[in-house]
Figure 1: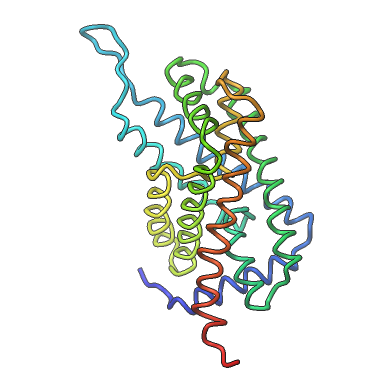
Figure 2 (figure 1 turned 90 degrees about the horizontal axis):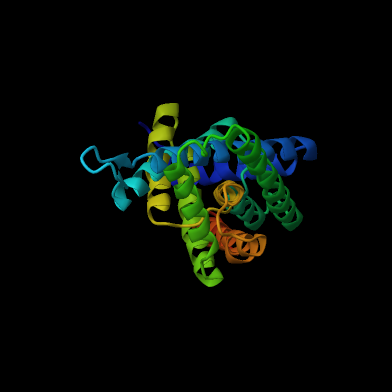
Length: 272
């Protein structure tokens, strides 16, 4: 597995920012919908697997939940599919755009209006794609309703995320997008497909294991839990999780990654 120097990776990210800034709005909306779909697919698979790890003790006939650490690791192992699918298909993901367009704006390759447009369009259409996959491929087919323990796990995930203190959710959102943007950086750094998947997998597993908050993943997970009967109101979903996680994702991706590397590989080396 060969990697490119960080300066080349940074330049490649600027190229993507410039290309996306000139993208037809219809194409951008469609690509953003597909990002929501792919992240939703990854979340569907990870929830289904992690929630199915319990077993019935033959001796007692009682249901035994799997160890919490094992459940969390199982969840983390399969979620990366969504992020890798987004990057490898060139889809438009809100969280990675935070880094890409901030770096592009600081470098002068793109403008502030491109940054705002990209984040707004990708966020709303990621949400649309996530809700599509949740409703038509997870809820309507009753994928999570046959097993009460599986259904209970999804509801528990939705409730735990929606009962967070908003300030804590912002902090968790910052940590999440620092790692998500790092994984995107790593994918750009590696030339071969298998290497891209392996190196990104580890980084995304770390963010899930840390319990950080990914706004686009939550656009799928929490509404699914709500449809299955979780004790979550729309206000709790928006105020306690989605909006604070979004703010944290913007701060983590735009400032702690985008700004830092724009300074390190661009404006910090200029002669003024």
